[in-house]
Image 1 (cartoon, rainbow, N blue to C red):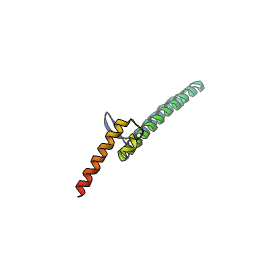
Image 2: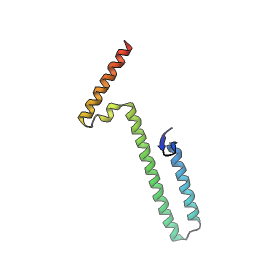
Image 3: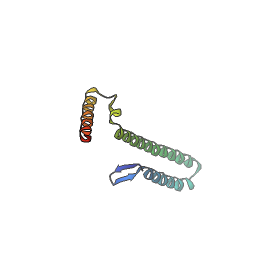
Image 4: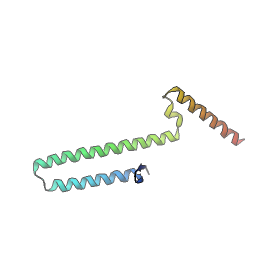
Length: 106
């Protein structure tokens, strides 16, 4: 389950975006049903634009979520290409951490 933190608390990402799409579709259906031909075209364009925006937000959020998961799993991977001082600090930290683990085992 992919959770996302919002002002109201943690929310499942998939549920949130499914809900937004449903609300958008309901608005579209109400407007589109009783409109003239020209207006129907305009409403359809508006709907497509809005749907594209929702989908891109969903994609960005899920991609960020996946990146965060990868980052949690592998700290070195995240900083391997970044600035050297930061990488060195992290490597020092990792080495200390490994030494502590080895000492605990003994």
